[in-house]
Picture (cartoon, rainbow, N blue to C red):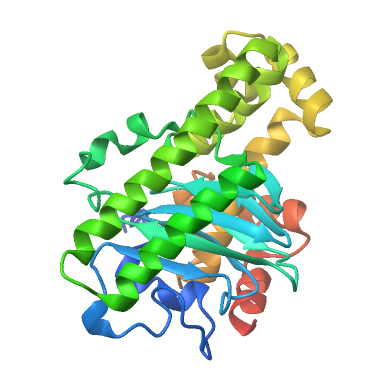
Length: 315
């Protein structure tokens, strides 16, 4: 009797910094800030900085294995980090950590800002790579992934971006260390604003308003292995009914909808950036069979997985 071959479990491609540029920069990018068209001899391994000039009109959903800081000085951008969605406006910063599903879309024509990408060990001389989320909590699962700064605060952050760019362009002796110092000081400046804001929120938020963001973060971590609302209710110390009711009151959607949304994001990333078969994807997402995955995906998106892949590749 023939034995059934078990499909190997694929993973979403998690892009490394040196193989990421083609996903976020336009082919005809002629800008000159940071790493855009920078002489290769002036580049510093483990970190890249760009302005929004030359940025693709949409990025993701995808995963990367490095940290990211996005800084908006004018205009607006829709950003999704895991299940958390928000709109960048002047003074907004957002933060992405390795392994997080993220996307950008609806970038307005007048948008301008900067973004910095750096590997986990880039600041090793100043802070061990495994301590980055502890020292800078906005890079941790439990942290808040965005912050709104005052005009004075965002000017200070933008000035640090300018100093990093100046070091790269002039490439004077010691520029590598100077870039690391400026990046560290930028993060420290942001942390001061972040901690002050979180202290205020902790003092004024109710348990229910805290419950929803905590639920979203847990779903972003555990959605492949935990798909029942009761799983998350237990982790949060509330009843499933209370969790569902609170999520619905705050977001307008049920807790089950949020879990499904995270699964769809994961599926879209695999469909768009790999040629992994639908059967293998259904196994990765722990569906009982491909038909169940097809049905789920169509209910959530209005199209089949293969139709989504064809449209994504042709786009």
